Figure 1 (cartoon, rainbow, N blue to C red):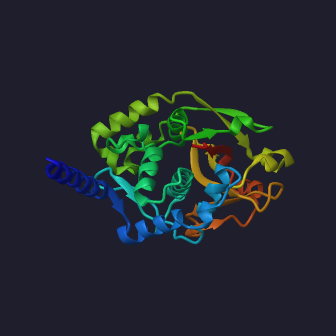
Figure 2 (cartoon, rainbow, N blue to C red):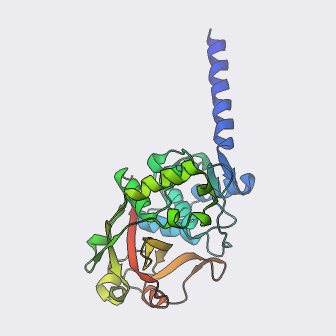
Length: 290
């Protein structure tokens, strides 16, 4: 009886391993899983960080110089995609946050990382087709905040404002999203957008980023979402704050489509934002201590 039970458990373990791998689309499974394991098991990752943001900053900096890659999450079917050889602004932020969260749990396996990545990327942490991915940043924030993964701390800053938006960019521009050619996907995304009619959220205006109080309130490793002036969209870019010290100028570490790589902005955040009139300001997200 014990032998049969042992064989059954072994079968389940093997089946789980196969399932775990077939449910993930890697850029290069061997190199990606090796990099993840080495990062999580490194001595530097085991140090005592001042806060979760500092841990995010540590992992984010390891990807500096990584080539920019657009639309890496798109495919014929919706599966969890892990690709470390090229990153866009969203996947860069997600990977850094998922590594930091896994590290805080003192876990060191790529399997733990992909579990946390899925928890952050998908509604309720579960994959159920293309619409289950949290496409809009506001939706991503609301869903993850509700589940305690991270917090929107924008309204805790000394100077902040509020903006009202109705989100329907995806369905209005259906031709830009191949997955929306499917009527079911289109209908489900439309339903999600209907939940964000006149959505009100806090943001820090670009002009207020020059204030000393704002600069000092930003932490090394804060995730920032750049708010757009487009009438039916909330955010068009994301990145991670890097600072040499608490009182130093904040810069943006981000996956730049212009320069084709993950890099630190040449200008401080306030000046970087002023260069593009499309950006009205930022939202600030911090990983919760688990």
